[in-house]
Image (tube, rainbow, N blue to C red; front, side, top):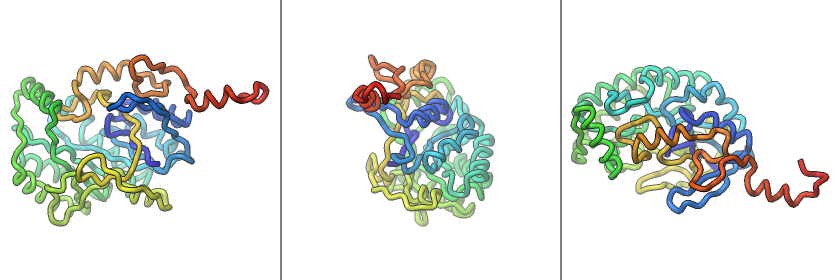
Length: 317
């Protein structure tokens, strides 16, 4: 099983202590965001084939990544966009993020990190010409540190539209979701820049915008994890939306828990609510964020507790 940590929230940036505690415990507890059911997810070396870490700031976890690697090999999907603060209020500066990716390359090899320029958002602050210049500068800075860049254009969901409208009102900018032709044209230009920097240009779950010479993205990528591990890791493709080619995984994050404050985020309904939930987080509990009425303090999984109750008293540990 591949563990995704997490496309729903930035676990390395904000929940590194929790992740390390759960690896030490050998499991975490999860809530199904659609049905509300809870379950255990094993996080032991015999249960986990690899980790995919999604982040904008690996810093809080960086010095402890060997503890992650001791359980299973990992790859990092590292988002660096360098957008203006009106769009990304709390992300670390792009230069600092680039430095972290370079360190990942140095410490864990050329396949350890994938750069995500994602999502591409068209605003009066970030028109197509701005993206070309910004993407080129980041590609130059990351040359030799990554072999792939993943790009997607913003999906304007209802909550995305609401958050963008609020940010635009505060920041005095305008945004748009342009016609497909404009996106294809920009993708073609960005792909050429990536190719000149020695990077594969991958498009995430948007086959309509895949340019010549590009590739569909496998963000959860068993082949990359196999290269990192030095052994085959088998997993079937099991995308979570049309055109998604991710390999099967288990995501251990939770929606509405990332306090980065990005105006276009699909995983946060209201930035203020996400900040409140983050403030209530218990890094010692089994849940990243427990459902209403669920105890957070139990450290043994229900299965472990049940097994212990069945053991004779003289051999319980």
